[in-house]
Image 1: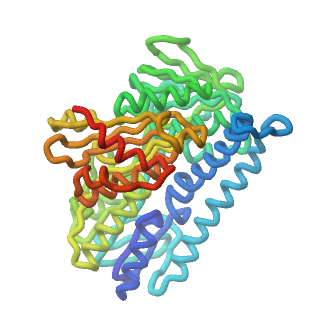
Image 2 (image 1 turned 90 degrees about the horizontal axis):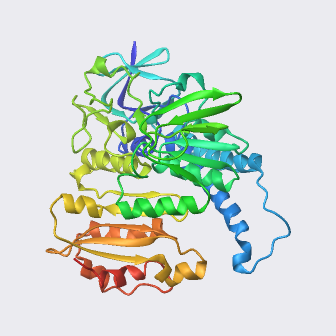
Image 3 (image 1 turned 120 degrees about the horizontal axis):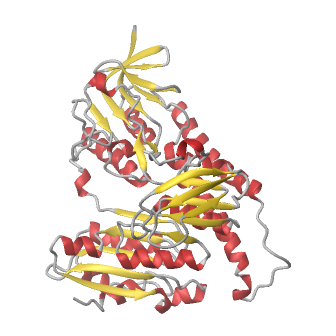
Length: 457
């Protein structure tokens, strides 16, 4: 016998719980299935724990700089990694418990904590039970990709998940992957006292960014003593006693790096390989992501895919926006679409990088006639007052329509200041609207209108 619901949601990440709330509030019965930890990647192995750790690392960094601000500390700065981890666990654990409590107390919502697998088009096995629904929403998330590299099977390595369980700083952390996850862990552990080396196969870090942004990020990290190895087109591993040797074929530098720990940060893969999607006929792309249309419908009517498993975004905010799009279409007669949203994200090194829209390179590749404005953080009063003048701001404007095409703010407060640009872009207002605003002084945001007044072809 099967138990029937109006809707089934697989996964309690950022899209699942709010969707359950909207569906149950509309009178539907909902089964929500979570295999392991409520809250998904963000709460358990992503945003919440890592940003908590980054806050601890920033406190250590600022303490070391205390004399720059006329503050004298009585002795050296010491790191209690057990206490750092305990703080991280407490913050993450509270968020996880809040999500679970919300779901279990939700009227008309039945929570299953087990693995879900399709057995047919509308039937899912969860544990020893079969459940059915006319509407099924897949919010299965993603996990760290493990590359096929020579010798990897001979050594112990860390992922973005397992590194969170360390209660001591590695003596020398070797990070494979020079993109967003790897860079955040690199700076964090450097500030916790580890020697850190980043190995990147490409010619520069965070390759999706403009070269000037990439170069500036590299300068920031190297200024803190982080070693960066680029053009490592052949990476291998071998044990060296209790250490790990990473072999690299780079254009320069030593051919081998020996570290105490290795972190793999080379991308993500969707959690779609053990859901039995073939039993329902749900189409996947060549990377294993669920194929969806502009309203997140899969190839099978009545089945939707939200969050990291659909390949249409890799952030907490894109997953939550997926929920908003699905709910708007199903419940509000509001035809929202994935293609309506503007790309926006942040890199949480210190100082952070806030990004929105197109890069300068993307705008040029698209054949747009553009004007570009830049301003170094050394010319922003708020940054000078805070003693944090690394980085710069850049904005790209369409020369014919005056529409803002994109912006990058690499500097103190950049992850917050970028939202002023995002708001103008979302409203489809010209850059002149932002240029004529009266911002608050002293802030980082106040120099955005000034930068717009100094656009150059």
